[in-house]
Length: 460
Image 1 (cartoon, helix red, strand yellow):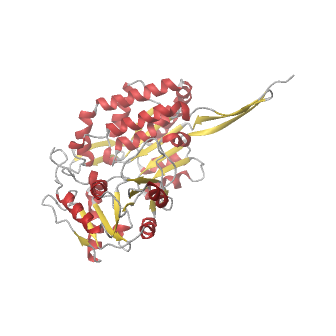
Image 2 (cartoon, one colour; image 1 turned 90 degrees about the horizontal axis):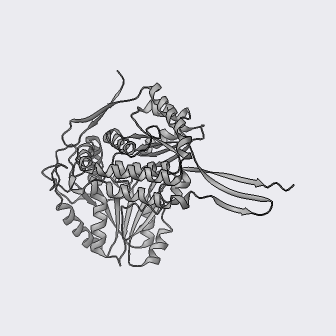
Image 3 (cartoon, one colour; image 1 turned 90 degrees about the vertical axis):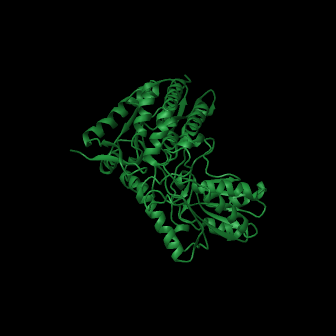
C-alpha cells in the first residue's frame, strides 16, 4: 500500500481526513494530461477563460457554509471569522479585471517595412504548491491568473489542509473548467521532486518554509524551470512618535495574533518610539488579555489552536529561551492552554536581536516589542533580519514613511496598516523570503513569457 497523507485536526488531535498519494506513474500521467490540455485551453478566447475561472470562484463561494467549519477542523481558525471567500474573490476578481490589459501585445512599432511586437504567452503547465495557513487565498493568487493567462494548473496542497485542493477542483470543474486543465493532486516529497526534475512543469510556484523552497530549487536545478517562492517572514512594525497610538496598537497586535499568528505577513516584531512605548505596551497587553482561547468551532472563540502541536512547541521554545535570556513575558498562562496546540498568546519586552524570537520566524501568537529612539535606530533593527516580506510604518507624515520605506529591505511597505494583500500591488519579498511576484500586472508577467515578433513585410 502506498503512502497516506493524514490531516491531524488541532481541535482534538484526531485524524480529520486522509488521502493516498499518487503513484509515480499516475503522477506523471496527470502532468502529461495537463500538458496535452494546455494548447486547446490557451486557444480559447481570453474572455471565455476569464468567465470560466470566475464561475469556478463563485462555485467555491457557494460552498462557504461547508468550508468554514472544515477549515476550523483542519487548521484551527475560529468559525466566527467566516473563512476566506472575501479575499479569495477579491484577488481573482482583480486579476480577471486587469487580464486583457496585462496580457495585451506590446506594440513596438510598424512602418511600411516592419511590424514588431511582443506577446505574452503562457508557460504551459504551472505547478502550484500551496500552504495551509490561508489555503484558499494563497492558492488563488496563482491559480486564477495562471488559468486566465492560458496555462494549465496542477495544484498540490498542504497535508494540514488536505481537502482544500479537492474543493477548488470540484468547484472549477462544476463551472466548466475541463478536468485536465485544473487538477488537484496528492503527492509525496520524492515524487514531487522527481516531477520537477524531469521537467513535468514549466513553472513552479511554492509558498511555504525556507527549507521547502530550497528543496524546490534543488529539484529544478539545471532544468531552467522557473521557480517562484514566498517563504519565511519576520515582519516588523515601527511606531513613530507622531503615530495614531490607538490605531497602531489595534492593527499591529491584531496583525501579530490573528489566525494564532499564522500569517505570511503577520507582525512578528514591533519597534516603538520611546515616547509612546509605555502607553503602547499597556494597550497591547489589555487587547491580548481580552482574547478568548478555545475551540475554533465555538462562536465565542477569538483565538483558536495553532494548526499543529509541533508548531506550538516551537513557539513555546522561542518564548522560553527569550525569558531565560532576560525577556519579560506579560501575559499569564490562559486556563485553556493545554501545553499542546492551544497556546497562550504572548507579548515580550526586554528582548534583543540575540534572541531567536526576534530573528527566526515564529509563525505563532507571540510578538516582541522594543523601544527605539530614532528612525535610524528603527531602520537598522528592521533590516537586521534574514527575511523581507512586509514592513508596517505608523506616522502621520507620508513623506517620512516613504523616506523610511526606501531604506527598508522588504517586499511591501505599509503605512498605517498591516497584514493585508492588495491584489493591485505585487506580492513579493527579498532575502530568505524568496523571489518572484504574485498578483498585479507583474503576476501575469511571471506566469507568462515574452515572445517577440519581428515581421518584415513583402516589398516586391
